[in-house]
Amino acid sequence: EVVLTQSPATLSLSPGERATLSCRASQNVDNYLAWFQQKPGQAPRLLIYDASNRATGIPARFSGSGSGTDFTLTISSLEPEDFAVYYCQQRKTWPPLTFGGGTKVEI
Amino acid sequence: EVQLLESGGGLVQPGGSLRLSCVASGFTFRNYAMSWVRQAPGKGLEWVAAISGSDDRTFYPDSVRGRFTISRDSSENTLYLQVNSLRSEDTAIYYCAKAWTHTNMVLEYWGQGTLVTVSS
Image (cartoon, rainbow over all chains, first blue to last red; front, top):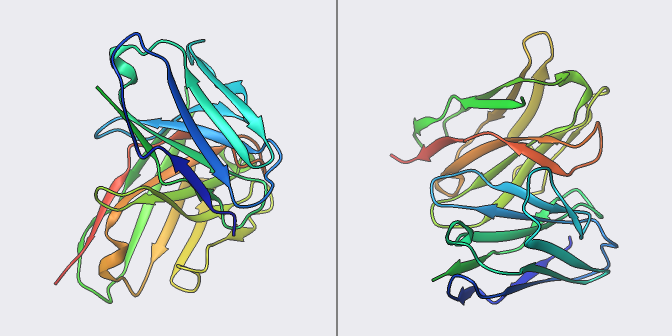
């Protein structure tokens, strides 16, 4: 099973600042990594797929990078609506599909 | 517009069973892989089942294999998750999600979820 470790667990920032979130895989997942955003009381929303491709309707301030075992989600300038929990997920080696434990971006 | 609407959750005693449903619209349901993902209160996301598009192969993690069964009725555009022998640790919101293609498990659309509470 591929274990995804996200860091930090919590990121405390202000609107306008840059956010850098990390996801590390226990084995190579090539670029088969996605990022999701989840706000309280809502379902997860796909942000990034295949490590660096923005999903439909996702603003350009969200970008993803990395391959193999180390991945990064960057939010270039935080908007108030970006404060949420972010999860990474791999589909290289499944079952099982696996998710990271999440990073909470808070004010 | 893709829409996914889950139902069937509720309060159930340990050892009990439920059948969760997810009605899909806005796409050709039978052609796409679908998944169920759950989230325990205050916790992260856990994948619990998937079914491929076109040939309906099913997949499970070890944690639920033998207790959970995913299926679909393409004539009704409905995805199901039969959950048996429920335990307190199965308490969670259960989301259905549409995959990118018949086998590509990019989970691009999610429903709003249905809450399952296992308690005596």
